[in-house]
Amino acid sequence: MKKGIYVLPCLLATVLGANWNANNCGFEPNSAVRGTVTDAICAHYDDCEQINNTNYGSTISKGQACDAEAVCLWNSATNTCGKNRDTKNNVCAPAKWGGENGTTPTPAPINAIC
Image (spheres, rainbow, N blue to C red):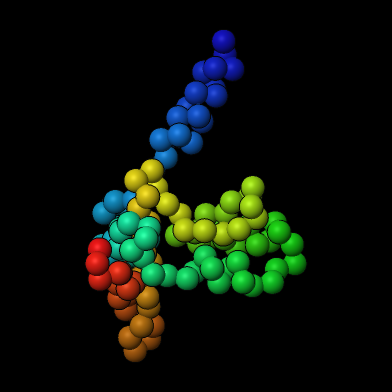
């Protein structure tokens, strides 16, 4: 019975997952990721694809590089890096950094039909 007590929270976290929202994706100073919450098909960012197209010393290194990006998620079944989609198929489209010192965040491009 004790095993069920320990496994259930992990199972629920995996099934339910966290959703992107204004608290964890936005332009407020306390946002975990600077970006815009949008549907995955609307977001235009290639952070994860760049990781897929870069040569790493090992699959483990590539997975670690992918998981280091909050907007990406490593798929160990296919050994690929993809957009970190939530249970509603939303992603946090990361801000692009520009300005004089590269410290000014601007929203990532979002498909106009969205």
